[in-house]
Length: 130
Image 1 (spheres, one colour):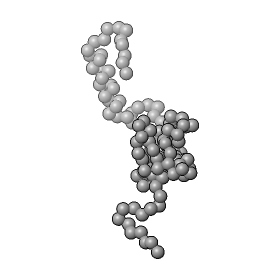
Image 2 (cartoon, rainbow, N blue to C red):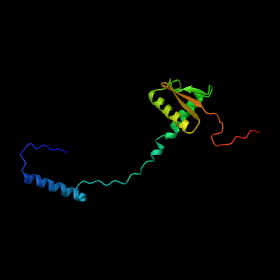
Image 3 (cartoon, rainbow, N blue to C red):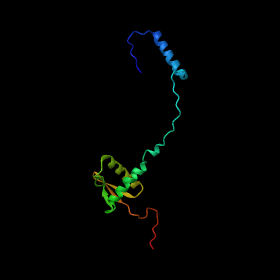
Image 4 (cartoon, one colour):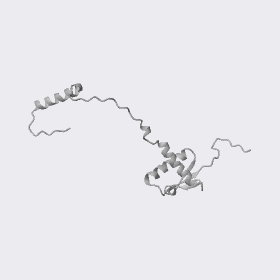
């Protein structure tokens, strides 16, 4: 707060004003017109926000659905009909799918090839052939 005086103010007047301000801050109960409110219950924000995992899962499903037929697809083709925000979400979903070893990602020039990983055994797992 800044108050520009329209008249000359003495140092004593400024010190009195400062003393009054310090007194009112130090003794908040002496303030007149104080309102007492009941504490409000804090809302559960989880009810209002969609979890990040649910958003990513939606885009993971979109990627899998679009590449399932051929087994692979280019990211730019997958996001061709999406807006900027949805394209970014789809990119993150591709990263999550790669982390979970459901797809493999390979950079091809300015695009990313997303290849669906078969349910072949992972490294270190034994495969029984009957």
